[in-house]
Length: 269
Image 1 (cartoon, helix red, strand yellow):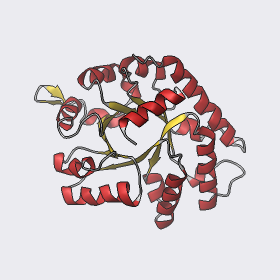
Image 2: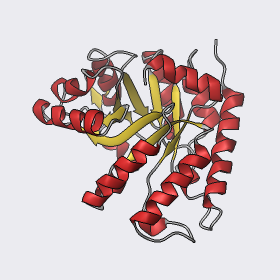
Image 3: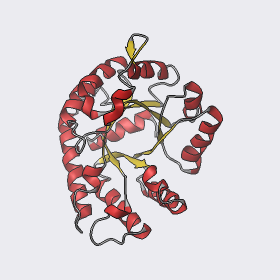
C-alpha cells in the first residue's frame, strides 16, 4: 500500500487506527480453546469486529514466533485474513548487516507479503537499505519509543543533538516520505511535536495510547499534519477489552470509540 492509498483510507474511514494483533494463547477469552485453533478464531473475530474502523494492523511477530513452526503458520494465516484495504505491518524490529537484512526483507515482503516492517537503525544504512529497495513497501524506523528504558540511549547527547534526533535526521537521508515512517511513543507528546517539526511530511506510527498512558488528543494535536500523517496503535485495549464470550463485540466497541474520537480530531488542510 503506497502513501496515497493509505491517506485515502484514513480519510474514507475518518480514522487513523492501527489495531495490534499481539495474541497469546494463555490470554484467550472464555469460550475459546487454548490452542492454535482458538488463537486463529480469536484473530479472525477481532479482525472482523475492527476492520471498519482500522486502517492498519500491526502483527507483533514475537507473539507468533514463540510457538515455533506452528506460530509462523498462524502468523501467515492471520496476515492473509487481513482486509486488502489495510496497511499490514510486521512488528519484527529487525536490523542486521546488509546480507542478513536482505533475507529479512525477502521474508517479510515476499514470502510473507507484509506492507511494512519495523526496524532498528543501530547498525546503520546497510542494515536498512535492503528494506528500502522494495517498491510500495514501508520501513518503520524506531526513533523515540514509549518503553521505560528509552532514556538509556535515545535521550543521550550526540554531536549536540539527542540521539533520537540524530537517528531521524540521518535515516531521512536514506529514504523518503513515500517509504519511510518512524515509531514515536504517545507517552512523549511534547517531544513528538518537536519531531513533527523535523519531519513535517512523514507518517508516524504511535504506540502507547491507552494502556501505556498516552493521550490520543495530545498526540494528535502535537503531531498531526495536513494529511493526518499518523497511525495510532492500540493492542491490549482492543484485543482484551473483554475476557468473556463477548470479546469480539467488546473489541469492536473499543475500536469504534477510538475511531470516533479520531474522526473528531482530524483536521485536514
